[in-house]
Length: 309
Image 1 (tube, rainbow, N blue to C red):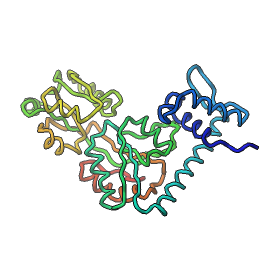
Image 2 (cartoon, rainbow, N blue to C red):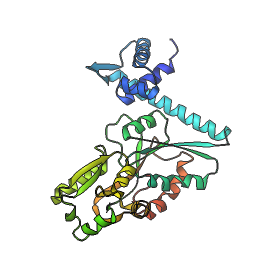
Image 3 (tube, rainbow, N blue to C red):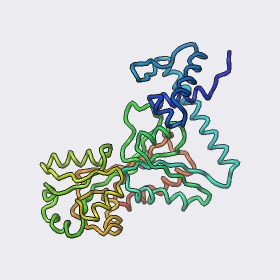
Image 4 (cartoon, helix red, strand yellow):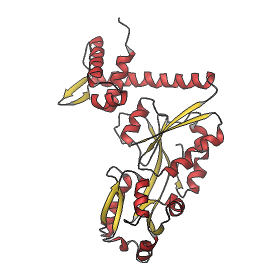
């Protein structure tokens, strides 16, 4: 029997995880034709197709699901081997690669990840920022060790990873000082027909916020929407509208952006998750991080819940 080509298997694995050749080609920095050809060679070697082609979509068939499960185990084991070898023989620096959802305030990530340096002098921290789909795709192919997120992995996801709940907290609303003064007394009704700066469409905060507004029959005037939370704060600082953030960074926002608190609510919940390929956290950089997580999260204003579970 011919030797299994692991390059072909890896291209198949990434494509199955991503759900399309186009997305896999972007992640792997290869042309779609190259990936399609490599998958075709793998299918020829196996003697059967791994995907059902439905229009432009690729759907794993029964044999494809079996191959995918084996491929996932193979590359998970390879990643574990790599970490073990590096940990034993590369003693100089331990690389810890993390992803941060772009909608999250970066001060939360800073407060959480800086504990790595406090515990280990030889750590090299690599941070990547993007949307959840892109980061979990990199997590699936072992390009990231963990992802800091405002939402858990969705049920039915092809990504083999686990959502570890860190904590939850409320939401605070801010505006330039002269605007905040006029809105405080009758909050939250005072937000009705007020200029408002909101996060992007994919944001969990946006979805929860709009549901809350509807329940209270509040109709703000959406002046702008931003994927970048820092840009939202800058426009709020300039007086273009009210904006909100997790209550956990309330002090940071008022001090850094010279704005004033309008009000806060716990009816809208902000959650914090760490996504990891491990059900039980074992990465040498994650373990000390979670040893500090409870105190860090609690001091930031979140309710601590099942950290590392």
